[in-house]
Length: 108
Image 1 (tube, rainbow, N blue to C red):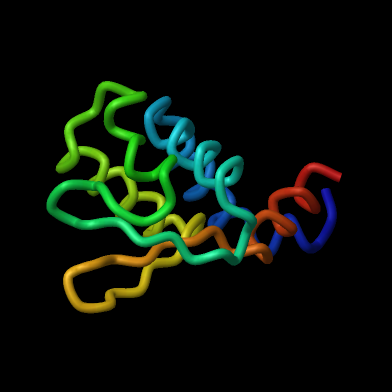
Image 2: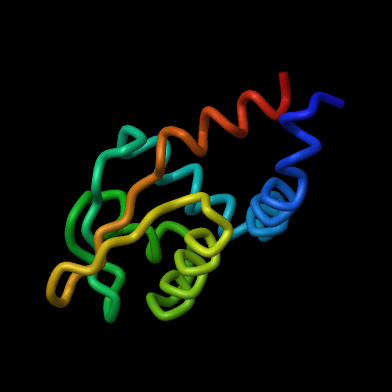
């Protein structure tokens, strides 16, 4: 195991723990597929809607109520998989490109 992986094993364990939930994994993969990493996507914290169409339709496609989607997004953020910024009533979320790079390097 490389020194890089050794030093960051706790960080990666938290990421993998967050992604072990099927709904969080689906949300993470959806954000990757609909929005380029680093692109900010707006969501309404009350409804889970607005902004990028795929985020607005996320609850419908996954059969998850908006409050549960908000919870999963929060868990992904706490694990360092996505970033969030509040702008008024909206929460802007995006996938940090460096996170994807770190995950890729972990497996190589």
